[in-house]
Image (cartoon, rainbow, N blue to C red; front, side, top):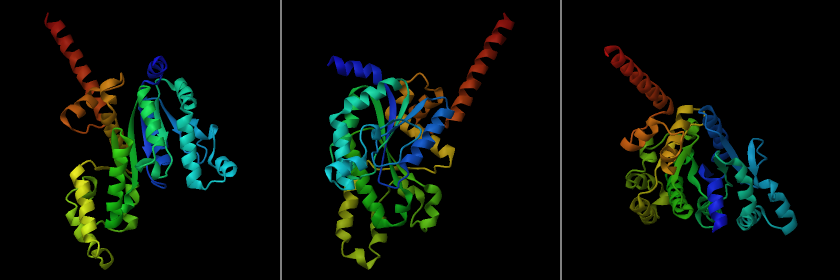
Length: 312
C-alpha cells in the first residue's frame, strides 16, 4: 500500500490514452497535440506503447526500449498479432519498468500512443489493466478513440464502427471521447447520406438502416441491423468529435473536450476562467478567447480600483 501511495504522489497528473484501429492517425494526432499543448505553455511528453510502430524520435518513453515486436516474433515464433499481444502482456507483468520511467516526468502532461490492434480495446485484458494501474498511481487519463471519418460514407461500416466504439468504451473503463479523424479528407471518399451532425451526434439510426437496406446484399439482414442500432441507442454513450489535424481550432476543441472529461479544468493550476465557465454552462470557449476574457477582466478590475482611488 505504501508503494502505491508513493506512486500516486509521483504520477499525479493528467494525460491521454490515444487508441484506435490501424491507420486512424494516432501517431499524427499525438504529435500535433503535443505541439498545441507546448504552444499553450503546457509541458507534454509522448509515451510510445506500440512495439510494432516506428521509433518515435520525440518520445520520452518507448516500449521498444523494453522489447520489440520483431524480437518477440523471432524468438517465440509468433505471428504479428500474437507477438503484439505478448508484448502487452509482458508490459502488464513488468509495469514497474514503465512506472519507473514515468517518475522522471512528474508534472508533465502525458500522451500515450497505443497500438492499433482492435482486440486490445474490445476484449483483451492487458491494456485496460495497464491503464487502470496507472490510474491507481494517481494519473488521470482520458481515452481518445480515433476513427477514420471515411467510414461515415458507408452505412454498414459506420454501424460496425459504432459497435466497436461502444465495446471499447465499456471495456476500457476510462473517461472517453470518440473522434472522427481526417475530416479534411472525407470528401475524397464520396458524399455523406446525411449531414455531419447526424454522424457526430449519432441520431436516430433507423434512417441509416433504411439507407443501408436499399442495397440488395444487406436487405436480407435488416432485422440484424435494426437490433444492432437498438443496442447502440439504448446505451446512448457513443458520440463523435470531428477532427481535422491541420486545423488548430479543431485540435483545441478536442483538447477542451478531453480536459472536461478528465477533470483537468477543475484540478490543475493551469486552468483558466474560460475553461471553468465552459464546463459550468456547457459552452465551448476556445482557449484564446478564454485568455482574452481573463485579461480583459483583470484590466477592468484595475481601472475600477484606480477610479475609486481618485474619487477618494
